[in-house]
Amino acid sequence: MDCAESEHASYYWIMHSVFIISLPVYALAILALLQTKSPYFEKYKLFLIWHTSTNLLAELLNSWFLLPVVHLPLPLLRFTGYLSLWGFSGLLQFLIISSMLYLTAYSVFEMFMFRFRASLLNYKATSFHVYLRVNTYIFRGVLLIFIIANCVTYTFGLELQAKNRQKLFSDQPDASILVLCPTVIVAVPLEDPFAMYNMVGWVLVVFITTTSTSATTVYLKRNLKENAQQSATVVRMHKMLLITLAVQTAIHGFMLGAPNAMFIFAAFFGVRHEFVATVSFISLTVHGFASTLAMILLTKPIKNSVILILKCKMSDKFSWSMGQSFPTQRI
Image (cartoon, rainbow, N blue to C red; front, side):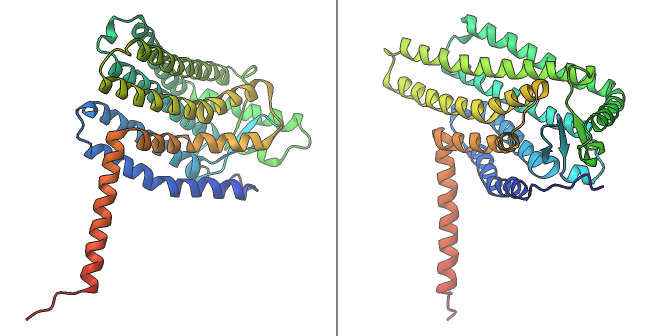
């Protein structure tokens, strides 16, 4: 049997095409960040470069190397990308995609925390800063436990997954033979302790990211109202910050939070609508592209750098074209 086989041709086409379109945007964003000279971005731009690179890597992995598909109503995930062709097990690919989700969620959390610090002069004196710091330590602790626990129990997890696939195939007479592929991961958190502690960590990370980013946006909105008597420049900067936060909160909430919540629900209770799962996979893949595009359009120093880069490229192209049309004549 071909474990990388799939009938989802349109799904493959969308995943591949979106990455080809988004790659120049990522490259332009990173180049613009490197050239940004605003003092506000001296420390922040290095983090944004890392955040954008993480989004780029996650999209590349999902759209070309992992390509997860489902076989509803069976509670499983099958990977059909290049990693499957190269012999990577389904469990290892699941750990790879989980690690990328952890890193993506952490970078989103850190981005909102930096915005909080940048908008307040005496942010350390606030109780909200303590709340964010506690969440930071929890986040790092969960990520460290995730890495160590899965490294130690990887062989045990492979054995459990082999038993889960065999049991699922035996219990479902109409199930495809593809269920037995080593690239399949079966989601039975209530029966599989390996899956259970991974699911607990996942739920905790999604909860922290969702609550802390939303709370940061609400807190800063209230702070802007309290600082309404400040200079017009400060108020204008805060408004730009809040607009950016509101848009990025919506993007991460709908394109990252909602699909993760759906997958957590499906792992415990199951779902029957394959269209919802497909849209969720696509949404998780392209959310970084949407966030990067919003960052370019809504963050003035970055937008100015992008405009300058494009103008220089157009000027160079025009000069080259004129040189070809009117070559210099030797006397």
